Image (cartoon, rainbow over all chains, first blue to last red; front, side, top):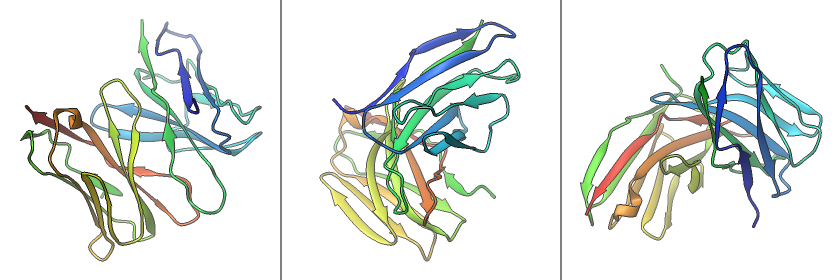
Length: 114
Length: 111
C-alpha cells in the first residue's frame, strides 16, 4: 500500500540527548514536510523540502535539523537545543511542482521527555 | 490577528444531525482550501479540497468557500458516531506549498 510511514510511534528523550524521527514515503512525492502539533495550537511547520538535497526552515526550526538525501526519506532530529520537545510530530508529503497539490500525512510520532 | 481562525469547540451533536464547521482567514492570497479529519493519536486525513470560491460535495460532506468574506465551511449531513474526530481547516496561496492551519474543531456525535 502507498503511504507515509513514521517511526517510532512513541519516543522518549533524556535531557541533553538528540533523537531522530523517521519518515518514509512510497508515494513518489517530491515535497516532504515536518510539523509539530501541540494541544490548542494547531500544526506548526518545522522544516520542508521541495526536492532531494534541498530543504528550508519553517516557522519553528530552532532546535531541529533535517536531511533529504533520498526522495523517499526525510528524517527529523530533535536536538538538545530544543528546550520544549514534548509534542506530536507529523510528517507529510505532496506531489510538489508549480500547481498546488494537497499534503498527505503519516500517523505521527509522540515524543516525551523522561 | 492569526492568519486562520477556527473555533476549537468541542461541538456535541446527536446522531443524524447536521454538523456545521467554519474557519475565517485574513490572507486574501489564499486560493486552495482543505479540510482534514484527525482521529485521536492519528495523523490528519484529507477530507475535502477546493480551489477558489464555490461549493464541493462528496457524499455526506459539503465544503463551501466564500472568498469575498474570507470564510470557509464544512457541513456533515446525517452525522454518525464514526464522524467523531477533530476537523482541521487548512489553506495555501498560489504557487506556495506551505499550509496555514486552523487550530482544529473537536466534534462528538452522540449515538
